[in-house]
Length: 262
Image (cartoon, rainbow, N blue to C red; front, side, top):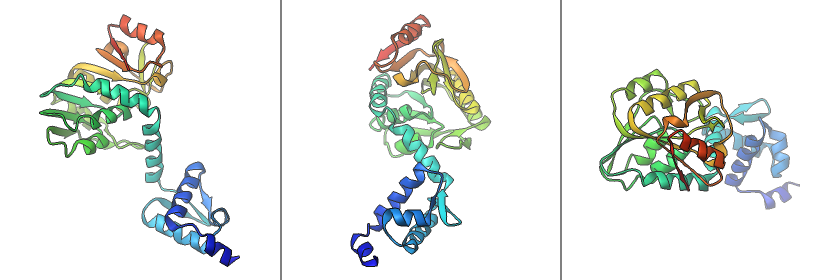
């Protein structure tokens, strides 16, 4: 049996990836189960898990392993980024056309605004104010962009800063635009977030900008989430894709919110 395992052994990198995927699909894995699945010895799996623990990818348990909190966050954030990616990119492209040289722009912590940030790397004389570590990382080497990273407490589950300190930091700024995403947009035009502190930061962003733009793909409409952070009436422009319900576009216009469809 050992010779069969040796001839068919998967490369270490492949084994580690298979273990990560198994952990992504279940709360934990056992050494014996992974050894059977990958057709290697339990000792090999233990060595693999030791490497993963040293890299802080997992936490060892008796007879197996579970994902480390950092890795759970990474999987969650990656999933959010992959969802409706083509629609988000098109929305970001439309938003990019609104931004002019010399402006001051606030970008929130959403994944669609992260796509917008990636389109700003060639901007000239632009100031970007953000509580998003991901946005700041994207733009840190953009020669024509000054990045202001707001202070705050790192929000559990995402690379974002939030809380009273973030709100206080926003108070000293004035911006031309605030670009924001949403967790959901209700049938009455209410805009929702999943976190109270993030919702409060979003409100403050709109207060500090002359104009506000909501970036929301069609999948966000007709739903609700934990916290109401505002309404479509709080935004000058809504950019969405053609899968958004026509009734929502009509409602936005009735609330004096211009609609751009991508």
